[in-house]
Length: 151
Image 1 (tube, helix red, strand yellow):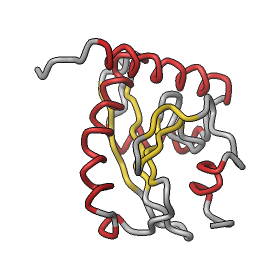
Image 2: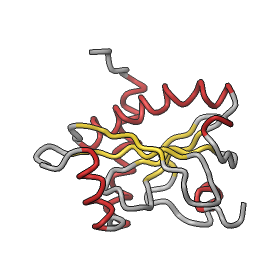
Image 3: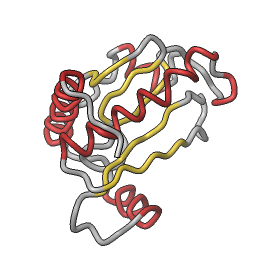
């Protein structure tokens, strides 16, 4: 879809900092180009799907494990203390995407207050975001070799 930012990032027309971090058959993850700070990862459908409830059963079944792995990689790769997950599909054209964004140790703002501050600050520096994407990708690779245990 020509006017869909998510589709344009998926096609490579708009470069995501650091490129694709990980993907499954139905989902792609890359560093968020929006104002969610360094280390924010957007998880979006590869195909243009406009509504969460319109996901195929296969895409739905992949999402939980994929988001779980990415959250762990944000903690392990970037030293995040917490990873928040949001989903906003309010601007046309709609494309299902979730944002996993870190809260780092020492940050006093929490949840919505942190999100509002990050949005006010605008998108992070492209090079910092690319380095964060690399770190998350490396943490995923390390986790694949030695899976984390449930705590």
